[in-house]
Length: 90
Image (cartoon, rainbow, N blue to C red; front, side, top):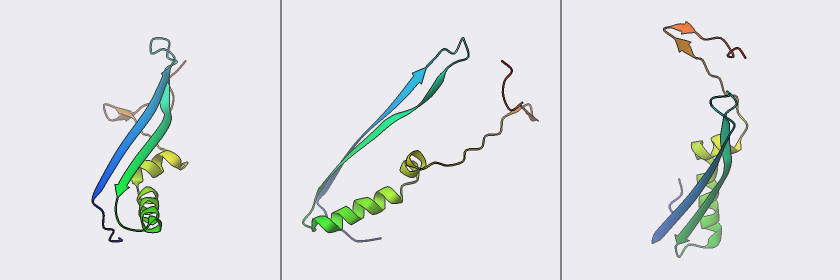
């Protein structure tokens, strides 16, 4: 990693989610609705070095990259050791 001298860093993150439908009716859905990150760095380093640092931090963050990149998701569910059907009957 790169050594960057700084005196203070403040990070504020707001994550929004949505949920629609009804659990009783079996129509409930939910997911991410947005993510906002604000980072305030106090440093004597030149802006280009700080920009490079935050770019590297974002590109190497597993959680952030899981949200912004399309990826394959696989789920396996079992009940008492037996596989559940792919989808519940309607």
